[in-house]
Amino acid sequence: MKKFVFTSVMALAGISLAVAPMLRAQDSITIKDPAEFNTYQMASTQIDAKTKASQLESFLKTYPQSVVKKAVLDSLIDTYQGLGDADNELSAASRLLQVDPSSMKATFYSALIKKGQCAKTQDVQACDDAAALAQKGLTLAKPAETSDSDWKKLTSGTYPIFHSTIALDDAISKKDFKAAVAEYRAELMLYTDDQSKTQGLPDTLQLAQAYLQPGAKDLVQAVWFYARVWNYAPAAYKAKIEPDLERYYKKYHGSLDGLDELKAQAAATTFPPATFAIKPAKTPAEQIHDLLESTPNLNGLALSDKETILAVGTKEDADKMWEHLKDQVTPVPGIVIEATATVLKVAVTKDSRDAKVADFIVNLKKPLTDKEIPAVGFEFKVSPATALVGTYDSYTQIPATDTTAQSAQIVLRDGEIQPAEKVAPHKPAAGHKK
Image (cartoon, rainbow, N blue to C red; front, side):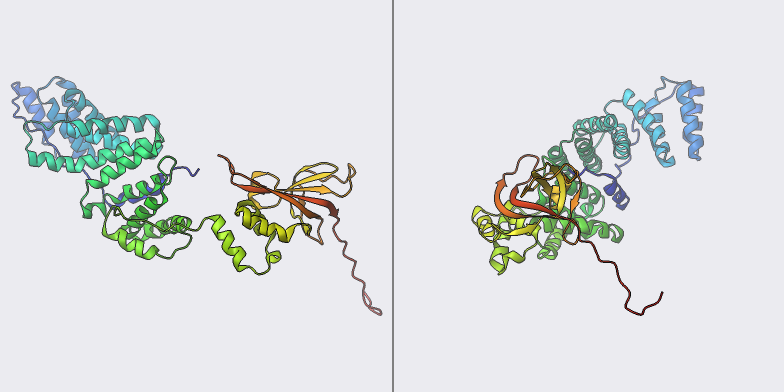
């Protein structure tokens, strides 16, 4: 199984970043202590961000129970964000949540920073923490002092990020790609068409990748969302996305015909219409049948093609191939998997070699001596190299299992090893002098 890769899509995050509307403390606050008031005024009006952050932190140490603690922490979040100091921004947001657990601003930025840590390190705890904060953010009630229009603006900026954060945790921490798909789709549904082409594009690619994973595998949906991203990605990324788009489309459809039309469809809308479908490629058995119908001389096929026909063709087509093979002598170029004095088991096709499983069993005409028995891993080739030959005797189709593809086991009789031919040394022509 291909590992779910996030680094490939995180690069796209530079296309656009959705940031929630800034929330500021709205309470009317009166500081009665003149010294505390002056210290607060001095810190909160600093122009230099580093100086402001330092003085606000100092104020909180001096007045830990100040009536403006929430406002100071709120301001610190903004200040650290402006400085690009994510660690201290997270610290300020975490402290604000201790004072005000229902703070949307603190919840949002805490989730956003934790999400970044999750994507960068794939640390399970960071991912779970981010998702927990995001889940909380989706359930926060509108504060009484916030108007309906302001709350709608706020949630339109935060809710998509919350769904994205939960989806990332589902994929990395929980390996629940079906749940990740649901969250990414929920996120994209919240974007306008223009937003889906910009800030929604990185997670559109995440969604395409999620559709390739166990539990959520759907090549048709994956191809659609790859095409959607391809349409609106910057040129540098378009070239990286296109090979995957073409590969998965061809894997499902069998060729690239119709892909341009699909791209045009995906440019028009984020989600495919309910009637969207891609014609699947012919099955291996159907392709084999076409091959047999279009090949006048079956004996001229490559050995690997013959074996493929015997392995995955219908019984009728496999038997038709076998009629041309039975009792014929054939070379068996392959790697020795097991060897005795009377039987050699050899892996011929690439799949068999990679799996180290014998697909040809050669019963020898006469027993080999101990010295003649080839070692496991020895490779037979074709003449003039050392070759193994035998006569087709029988074949058996082996059904697929959870871990292996359908295959064929081919048995040959009267096998023998033909030593490599010795090349005669070159003799100079008469009268030639060195």
